[in-house]
Length: 541
Picture 1 (spheres, rainbow, N blue to C red):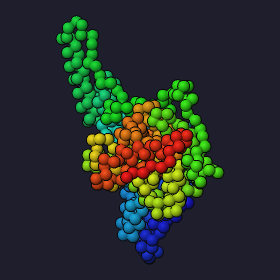
Picture 2: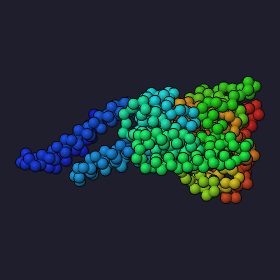
Picture 3: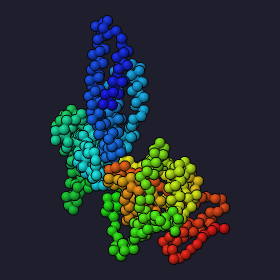
Picture 4: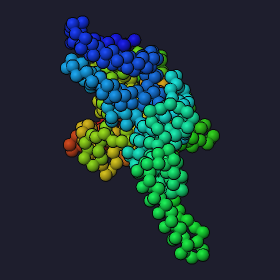
């Protein structure tokens, strides 16, 4: 009903802008235009109203489905623009002003393209075929949705714009398949075949490109580009035939090897391993190694706060040692942290290893906010809880970083610590190197969203109310390269995480003592694991 109220609220003042309709039959023309406009807009509003009734009951669950998220971006960007064009027929200043005010809060082209790319990313990472995504048959979905032929066509166009002809072919074929099945759509087969034939040609399949072009010309014999492509394809094939004839007998039966179809080779050498881990296809520990993993109650080296109610601790991995703490943050604390973070969420950045400046990158898709202990007693209490359990002084830690991963949100394999060739990596943060990482999971994720370690084959899955902890540096101060990790794309759901990273403060003239500081921190952690060592206190002169 909200959409009906919005539209009537926008249009009603315009009916009052033309007083005196009863005094002249000539002005009745405006009434006809007005009511025709209302009829069209109410049809549009009725469609949105049905959607809204479902979405408002569970907003996070609704947009947690990647298909719903993409369609929402498309609806409030592309389709809203169509609505604007429709109502701009009424040039009343008040009406245009109301419409413009609403538009500024809606997604833009970048958001719509980002949602489309997220779907393509999920498709590759989780080995999903286009039909599965189009029908919304994803694991753990609450609000099932589907893609129309037009939606599939839009996804293909986004891939085409990025010169990603592999995904262009997949999604244009899906659009064509749905049209062949009789789906009524605003797009036609000619447009789909135009993109599809060229995408296939770009991947080296000349025979298929020729067949698709001929099929296009059967539907539209006057299509100028298709006629040109047909002549070009036939010319190339004739030329290849002549080359084969003139070749030696050994080569006469050979054809030009087409380009291998598939996802283009990219910058990430461990992508295959990374994506396998995201799908839960990681390396399985041997029974001998598994026997060394334990669950235990942890009292923080007899910390008074945990003697009567020790923390539940579980070994997730041995090398590097990854520990999970269960029931370590309450639902009430999670909601307070999320409420504090939501108004400040901004696109997440990384520290440029060369300049030290913070910048956004395509391989980190999330939003983050930073919270200080002095802002809220809950944040301060959480900080002290971590200090009590790890023995590390929170005064050398960065602020709490709250991260939210939406549709297709991810952070590809990276290190939390700075390597030797990155002396200014954390200049912008005003800290030294990162000793350890503490990661809270503040939501359950229906599918995807694991934290994976490609170097060792470990996968840690999100579980609300838990936290994982590991050291980034060895006792010598050298970085532990096995801690290279990644946040897998969220397939279905909405992932909230909170990072607490221990760093060494950069103090002029003290850099030669940093390795010793990290060594002490490591030993303090060992006290809790091996209390029989009976270390008492460590000081730095």
